[in-house]
Image (cartoon, rainbow, N blue to C red):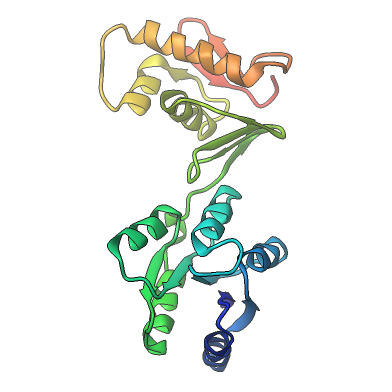
Length: 224
């Protein structure tokens, strides 16, 4: 594995690098949150060991920034704080696991091995069709370089369409995915949401990304 250790305590960082290197891993060290972000920008890692208490940007902020930037590398948080609220904050920030100092090196190594064995399907896949990008993990959408902010239902409709570009999707199919149950007036409700979705995605672009297929439903095109 290629591992980034983000720890400002020099002695601990050195010990972690020594132990991980002896196990055959490649290890880079970062002493601050800013340095960690710089490393991740130029290197692909299999895991990140991230201390929470860092100078400058703390570990929570680093974790949030990485997830916002669509970096899905497994993150193991380290902290001297054992409060439940800190654990919850770390996991909510996007961390995969949490280890409280002081800890046994053997436990850290075992947790890293467990994170590395995660099935690939557990990592959310970023969807890209044409110039539209959707990240299910961070719930963010872009049209080209412009970020588009979508309400929950419109986000789910667009995600459903991006997973099946070019396929005609009936209103019933869209409703089942976005609402998880049947409801009355399905045609009107779906049509309203599609109009709003078009307005947010198409302006100021020419053409319609979502095409109406008369008598059938809607289709996402890659060439509006």
